[in-house]
Length: 187
Image 1 (cartoon, helix red, strand yellow):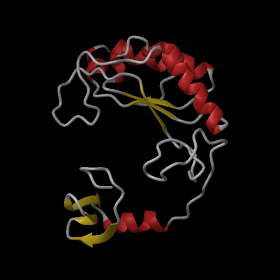
Image 2 (cartoon, helix red, strand yellow):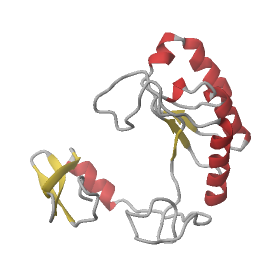
Image 3 (cartoon, rainbow, N blue to C red):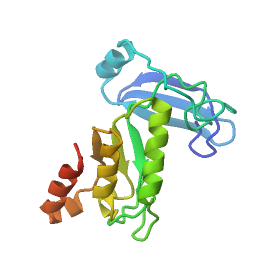
Image 4 (cartoon, rainbow, N blue to C red):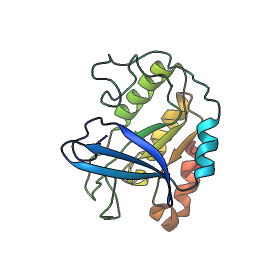
């Protein structure tokens, strides 16, 4: 995809002194190159490994434009969700200028019922619970994170992690103990 206009464009993968790179040219925005792996041997081993496809139990939306323009599980999707990333808050306690989530100190958060609904929908689509990663912003800022973990565990989710900057966990070790007791399996 063109990083400027997000139009699907062809790309060419090749070895470079830095590793494996993809070069692509958008008719509107010019040439772009992205490093996709620093270790060529590991990339080649991964590329040659057999791929075991497991389809989702059901699709959740019709196909309209095709990949990567359709977001979600459409009929063209040939792999189930291996790790569901659940963005529960846009709040964050760090003002990183390169933040992928564009999070702020006073950002939005999902309610427990919204998260439960999303997790039930995921089970309906996948046919079973899949590993979860709760993200943000900073997920440990969500005031109901422990309750969300307990709700997810009650729905049958057993592998749950948070993608955290670790500030709150470092300041309050009791939080890590509480989240683990609620069902958290990784940080």
